[in-house]
Image (tube, rainbow, N blue to C red):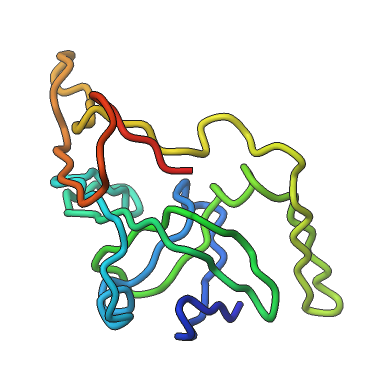
Length: 155
């Protein structure tokens, strides 16, 4: 599916096995030539098949993403990382009911009246995980967003 961000085009792979939302190849975001408000998760765990790798993932607040000629979402958080493709993951279902017409090679996005809970980013600057049955800090965030109190919210 062809998309447009800041006038630049790309193609999404629709990957419903990806629990993420909207992911971009890192060089694409960097090529836009604009500093979007962002936060970086250092050491994010990413599942790849039956294994897990740790990688730095940057979250960007983008003004809008167009799919075809229509605005898909405005003020959206997308991620960028070292990936082989741009992806539209299962997180899209928080905002849209998605209907596939495979006979005509068509996809319809029907906007939900109210996004599903958990579709915005809340953070205290770190992520947690379990390791050896202990709660540990698994990721650390840096941010270019303005903070209001101990947490920030985009969305």
